[in-house]
Length: 216
Image (cartoon, rainbow, N blue to C red):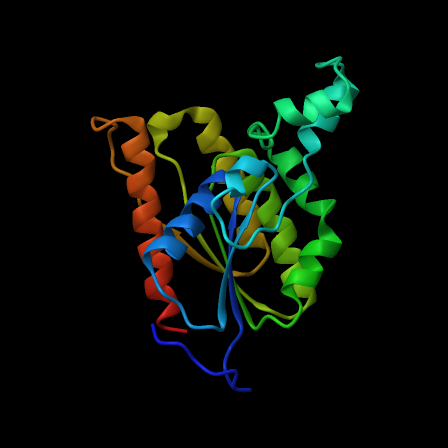
């Protein structure tokens, strides 16, 4: 895509990848595609290492260390807990995922102001993606932003728990009356290894998003 000038009629588009999978997709997009100046790619996660390679970051609240302290799971001081949990995100808990975005509501609001079209992407099944995406949708709708959710679901062999979380999140998203694009990006086996399985999914998802942006 060629660069564009800051014209008044140019749509301001933001693509936000939520959670570890979303940040991986954003990283692949920024590394392998070129975008107009009106398109901003953002990685958003509660795990600092999940966003490490994203040029633009929107950190979510790291609620899991707080959860651990309240539950007495870890007895260490705050600094040690924070250091230990820097890559743990929401530990697959959608409730913590939703809270991680809720506590950053004002930051999300500030980031989205002035946006015409918002594309949210994630692979459902984990904690941050399943939970936080609802807060992003709420904020965008408050600002009258056109919202598109480009998501993928896990394969059945990834486990019943991930499938259940994915199905529940999908039902919640559908209730919010946004444009939903569900992509099938995963192969039916992991014969080539689990890392290749997920990286191939990132590649396919990034291509879907890029092609979609050409149409809007």
